[in-house]
Image (cartoon, rainbow, N blue to C red; front, side, top):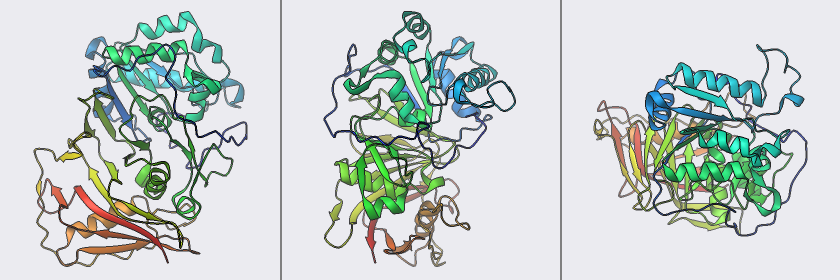
Length: 428
């Protein structure tokens, strides 16, 4: 997909198959090392990265060496030319080669000295073990993984059931450890996940039916890949397009089902910048106009005896320049923000579509965040509720300002950053 286009909400594997994957433990990647001291960084975008987002493109280029940056563009999540009916039309094409050239030109426009497509896609899987492509990768100082379908990245860059690195992926892993930046948007951000990488699903169906290992033709079904993606980031699960597509529900459910206690829920056109990923020095910063939600399940209690429910989970929402320490679970709001002391008494608006359902023609994005911020804005209430658009059952989400909650603002009136809002979800 072109950098300027919005990806489809539901992506189905083009070959139309449903995969059931054994929930085996992740295996070590062949030919790779995962040192504790990682000098590289990640720039992970929640999708819909705009062409004019100079801050995010500039950050990737800066971390790749500034004016000397050499960016390798990998778009294997796109369909190959052989599956694109518009492959011969430069104005309409949307395939791996076409999109690779498009992103390469964007990086050069934003100041990279050099950017080029790395010729990998599902029609050229052999290139992942090509010495020539490895040499191309080794000449780069940064990498960008485009959007599409993250399962194509698994197919292209990992060795099947063995789930071991191809030569190209091993080279990228080594470059990251040596100081390179690895960036990606949408599927390109998802693929850096460790075990239990999400493969699809909608929030309501996820809460009602739960998750299952695999990749399914039914795009509403919550699926995950037990062995995960490339494992560049392992301190939490990753989800993308979160607020725009109302994915908070599916993210909480997947984490609870698979035993994870944290999700990084990335928003569109906004980056989570990760320094020293996978090391004891791992630190994070938010860059962009939206934010990154951190879903915390350390104290969450789940019940399944009368339908699935969860209580005492936490929700934090980090915005521009906020920092996060994954080892201490600590949010540090940006220096220009001050703790908000709400003075208003406006009631929290009624919300009957908390997960921005695709079935609701009048639905609006960022519905979950909207209710959370509305509660933070009032001193009249400590609790607010919102419901799903779908019924049978209808799920209620309860937002609670408990001890430890705080909201932060750079204008003294509008809550931007939220820290430790308590979340409960239950059917009714």
